[in-house]
Amino acid sequence: MQNLNLDREAWRRVKLLCGVDEAGRGALAGPVVAAAVVFPPWMNMPYVRDSKKLTPRRREELFDDIVTKALGVGVGFIPAEEIDETNILCAALKAMHYACRRLAFRVEPELVLIDGNQTIPELPWPQEPFPNADSNSLSVAAASVVAKVLRDRYMVQLDDTYPGYEFSRHKGYSTHHHVECLRRLGLSPEHRRSFRPCAECKSTEVHDIEIT
Image (tube, rainbow, N blue to C red; front, side, top):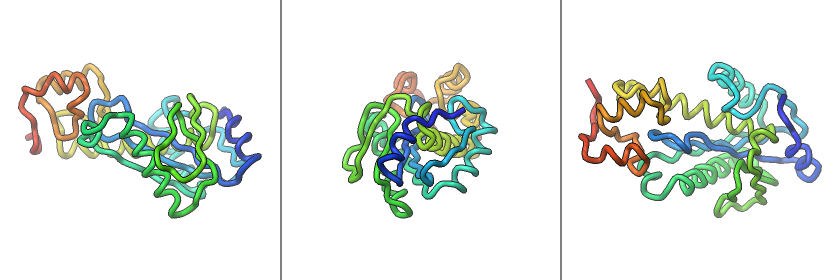
């Protein structure tokens, strides 16, 4: 059952509480995706929890429920190329910034809860970062589910463009199978060249067209 400690404490102070989390930070390929979610005060969705603790099927089911019940949802994508130009921490925080800004077109938060120990640069609303907030906040857990589902859907779609990498299977993470595909095929435009083992494949042919 979802632990609501952070939300309950925050809802005593504000009504419009925003939870923010990201997905894809440790992947070798694809974007880092962040989501921001605001629920009505004192919302309770007992089956929503940290996305890593849910099956893909359950995440998909909860995604529709979250989007339906939320007062607002915002999403931010930062592609692999931009991750390489800065670093993954800056990219993740930028994705969170975009997610909150897009959320604000529908509902402007009074407080932003963030999973982690970093605040989001240049955000105009009060922020409170908490390590493991996705296990102690419904709002943050819901954001983790939204970010994970949307990123997984994006990675599945990449199979149509780069089928040899089997992105739908590993979602860009550093599995043994993905590393073997990477060593055999080289880098795709979706790979993060600053990440190991991608950096070790720089001398390998880069596939900028569809693999046949």
